[in-house]
Each structure stands twice: as C-alpha cells, then as structure tokens.
Length: 213
Image 1: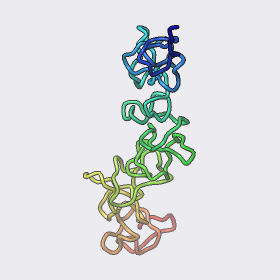
Image 2: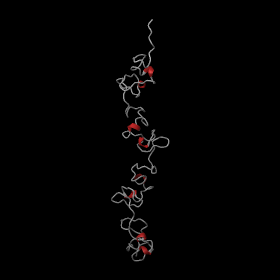
Image 3: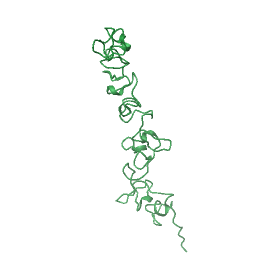
Image 4: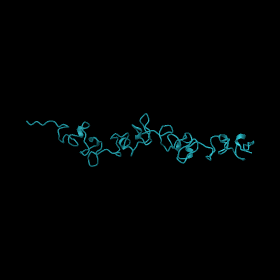
C-alpha cells in the first residue's frame, strides 16, 4: 500500500489549489504570496495586489488600497509628501495631512488662525494673510503687505515695523499724518491739518472744526 501524505502549506509543492507553491488559496491568510509570485485574487498576495498578469505586485500610492503603512488610502505615511491626505481623512501625524493638521481624533483638519502653524497663506504663524484683520502680525514678525501688520508698516525687509512720525501713515494716535498726538512737540500739524487739541498745532490753535487755524 502506498502512503501519500496530505498536502500542506509547507510541503514545497504547488497543490491543493494554492496560487503559487505553498501560498495563497487555502494557505491564506497564514501564508500569502510574495511580489512576483502567481496569484488568482488579491487576497493571495501579501501586498493585496494581484495584477492583470496574475502576479503579486508591489503596493503603490495609487492602487486604491490602504496598505504599506499609509495613513489613509493612497495618502500619508510613505506616500508623503507626494500624496498627503485631505481634510476628513485618517492621519497618524501632522505630515500625513495636506493641511498639516492631524487632530486629536486622528483626522486631517482645516487650518485655522490659532493652530500654531504657518499655513493657509499666513504672513507669519497665525497672523496676516487670511487671518487679517482679526489677527495681524506684531512688530518683528514677517509680513508681505502693510495690512499684515498691526502697526500697518511692512518694511523693505518684510518685517512688521514700529510706527514712526515720518512713516507717511496716520497711526499711533496721531492727529493727522505724522503730526500731533505722540509726535508733539517734535512734529506739530500745520494750518488746515486735523487736530484734536491745540497742542497738536504749530499755531497752537485747534478750531471748532478740528482743524489747525
């Protein structure tokens, strides 16, 4: 009597409906097939990808599968920075997200003006750009245009600058542009300029229409 042992998933033979030798088919999920081995269905493959030539294929960032340590399907993880995850998709770390924000529920979140990140076209972290006028940038912070700055002054090195009495702007409580208010007595306002009190004026006279007389 001849004795034939029952086929197994480690007998070195292609049998019992295996996709390739000792992998796939009835050996799944214990022993799945490696890249380059024959497959019939995606579950035969460790990668989860059985291509059109019935070979197990390497995972990619456009295969429509959540694999290879991706944060969500085809984004984040090893797909970063080429393919980052959109708002609402799963994330593990902030770099998984296009927005740069992975919230406490592990979802990519929308950028805000108080997230502590330089994003969404802000001039400096959480100020200027789309955060204007609610959150403008302080003196010394980066700016692109004057409206990015609380002071209203973006200098030629793209930094928000302190207001001065010769900056050509009506600011810092001046009565008129660069005169009166904190600029007194160095720079007082000429006749016809706006004034709030008589000391704003070079003439010492601020009339009832708030003009230096």
